[in-house]
Amino acid sequence: MTDTLAPGKPAKLIIDGKAVDAASGETFTTWNPATEEPICEVAKAGPEDANRAVQAARAAYDSGPWGRMRPAERQRLLWKLGDLILEHADEIGRLETLDNGKPIFESRQIDAPMVANCFHYFSGWATKLTGDTVPVNPAFFTYTLREPLGVVGAIIPWNFPMIMVGWKAAPALAAGNCVVLKPAQETPLTAVRIGELALEAGLPPGVLNILPGPGSSVGAALVKHPGVDKITFTGSTEVGKQIMRDCADTVKKVTLELGGKSPNIVFADADLDAAVRGAYNGIFYGKGEVCAAGSRLLVEKSIHDEFLAKLVERAQKVQPADPLDPKTRLGALVNESQMKKVLGYVETGVSEGATIAAGGKRRPVNGKGWFVEATVLSGVSNSMRVAQEEIFGPVLAVIPFDGVDDAVTKANDIFYGLASGVWTRDVKKAHLVARRLAAGTVWINTYNFYDPGMPFGGVKGSGFGRDLGADSVREYSQVKSVWTSIE
Ligand code: NAI
Ligand code: MG
Picture 1 (cartoon, helix red, strand yellow):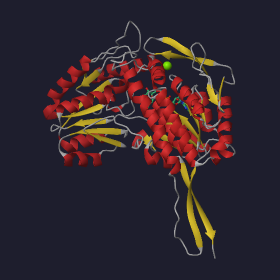
Picture 2 (picture 1 turned 30 degrees about the vertical axis):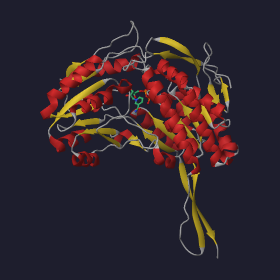
Picture 3 (picture 1 turned 45 degrees about the vertical axis):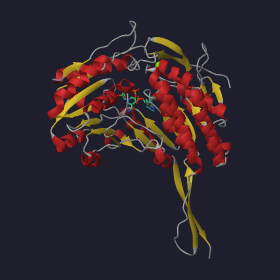
Picture 4 (picture 1 turned 90 degrees about the horizontal axis):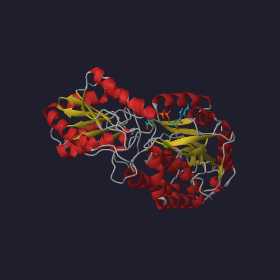
């Protein structure tokens, strides 16, 4: 397999085991948000390519090797892909940083190992998906089979381009499905590279297809295609709603992860230094372009001013810098429009009556790039737009509260329900508050931790279904009931 990402060559689509051009012959440019320069051309998939990829996936599933393969062999191949991702972690990490603007510290040290972990962890599930024998009636032998769904379409966003390949493809493949994955147009490169490594690992043609291209054409075609059994989506609320509507026509299963505005709650009895670090990492990790970002910081009134001062001091110390420098902790936002959206929200906050306590401005690095300072807005009330809407950038809204009931009321008074954080030394309070929070994840005295074994997903407007964990494997499989008359 030749590396389609060799310098000067356009990145291609991966369809049916081959790196190919788009049927239309069209390409698009992917950009480096830190330098505003083009990285390379990428084949631009369209509806015809969606159709080709779905047919290849169907063939691999319905009549090809994947559907008939022993689970232990599937396990071996997925494990091997995990190994190959680790071996190529430097290369993949660098590609991710060039394409997305996130610090190399994150893409090399955290994201690449996480993708490998996903393939390693989920490979083990291939051999552990069992049905039941059910004691219904002595006249029957009755049992269930746990079977794959068939072909899964995965549509992923630009904020964690390689991690999302692991989160979506690893459990779907482990459960025995074939996958057609569409990366975001802003950040296609690591998905294409992982698609190549999958072929190197020995995944048969058609099992994992990668289609970079626009959501409105190739993405929508995948969602509407009758040969696709399920769509798993992470991205914006608006597109998620459209996908759910489009899935209705072919009665497709759908999983949606639609972001959030997650409350990170600091009680007065918390370890304040640890909570400052947690509040900081909760919003500024990944430039705040993180669906689970702790973007609403709820601080108990009695410690509010002291806590804000410590947090502001820390935020002012960290300036955006070259994402390829291993010391950098704040990179460039993914593109100009995201930067404008984020800066627009800072203005909105000020016009609503909030105060900029730290940051608030664009700050180019070497005169270039879509960098924004680590920004803290204080004096925010929970009803303001900057408290209710997903900004998706390094902007934190600080909201005071008074006691447990007020904290829980404010935390839950929102459309979203993805994640949440609780900082306290009181064990009872921590777990009682965890039960009362309407969120798919609660972090207690920590924030932003993930593991392939722990399910992740939302409630309320943040969507439904789960990535990761045993739950995700169940969502990529279904039960069949078998009745045998033995009389
Ligand atoms: P988006 O929701 O448009 O993109 C996510 C994925 O969906 C991409 O692969 C895109 O090509 C695809 N897509 C778009 N329209 C589609 C359609 N009609 N059918 C099928 N697939 C389609 O997100 P976008 O525009 O990149 O970002 C807009 C805002 O969404 C951000 O500012 C942020 O607030 C939020 N967002 C949230 C994410 C999360 O993880 N919750 C991730 C990315 C964005
Ligand atoms: Mg890019």
